[in-house]
Image 1 (cartoon, rainbow, N blue to C red):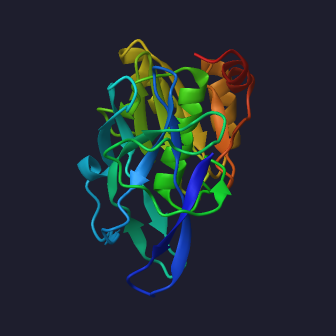
Image 2 (image 1 turned 180 degrees about the vertical axis):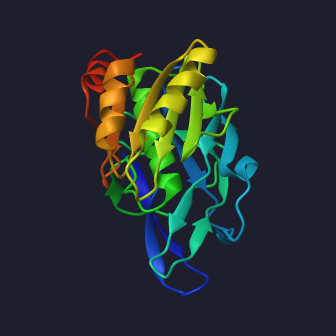
Length: 235
């Protein structure tokens, strides 16, 4: 498991706990981000897609990978971007990160599960990346083309659309994802927080698009046969 670390919001001055995510590297090592306890969190005012990701090397195989940059949504409405120093391997027996010689340790705290509670769109993306990696998809990155709704992710042979909005995904959303995947000779998968319109589910069944609903614990739930097959068989 990853750790929870205390983070003080500079806007309301209240202290919140942040569950540091753990990620599976392509080499099989589970790694966790090491937060910089000496640097204050930054308040997110304007978003730029290039700033949503951080590139770090696995401490065991040195493979570079892109991870969603850690963020914390404070109940006061402020979104905080947390500073990161590096990635550290998680010891399978103890569930805690090994300490590398040059690592700056994260602040200690109680253990917490790796899947993030969904509070922000970034949490939804983090949960999706974790899930896709657990299925065997590697080298997950942001998609080159922006989807009709939500956030696009890509891996070799796969396009994923993460829709964190409060409206059910429409038939057009599903069909556009399928068409984009067809042009790239890739599989596709749709993950939504608010579910799907009836015609979207019927269209997805017709096209063979896996549909998942992300619950607020960060767990993707299959909602059609294609998603059930993907959840069982993986990549």
